[in-house]
Image (cartoon, rainbow, N blue to C red; front, side):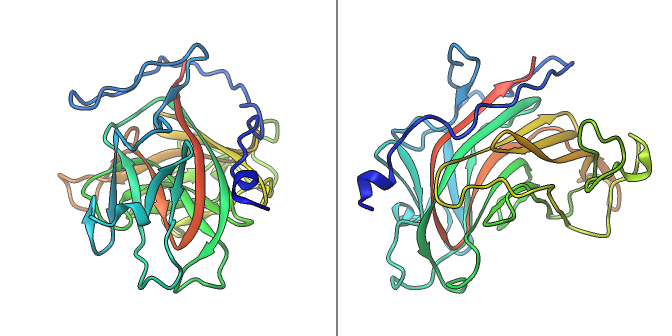
Length: 276
């Protein structure tokens, strides 16, 4: 397969699953980086296909927006290309891209396709990436947030990163039963503290083509979808209270990020849509 065939851009893998929401939406804008105007369908493109305006990059050792950023994140043929570097170019850093703007009460949509390169120390591991949401606090690898895992066979798992926490909810139509059960069967169940990972329900990823991952982030709740199927639901999301040691506060807003984690990957769409 030549490069043009590999990067062929067709229709989205799956049309977004429409979910009715009850609350008004709000997109929080910083004065220095106002959000782009929404399209006719209500979606706001966070990645414009030309450059990384509205984003910054942070690497574990090199820090924010390093000089060699093109090796880690570059725009090519209208796509975001992550880890376009020589496998033998030296030690590869992990890191992430982040929006400059914080968001709340939005539906996030990304479309990705795996590349072929993997980098030490994960030359023989599953290809790994991640969609980060509700990113808050200072930059480090990896920042305080909720991660919708993007990793071969595991797309849709949840990781609570840097002491965030929450409760796994039930799938629609199944009540508290099934693979994903409503913890204690109560909407006010306390967040779990025994694990940083919650497994998804089903493997709907296409390893050789484009995939659509969505997160419906409403207040302190979230629903994660892979190619139009709900695979995980969360509620009572919390973060450590920065003003009171040992206490937690609701996690309801934050920046949006894309991981850089030892595997080549392409993104052709990163959008948000305010919930109506």
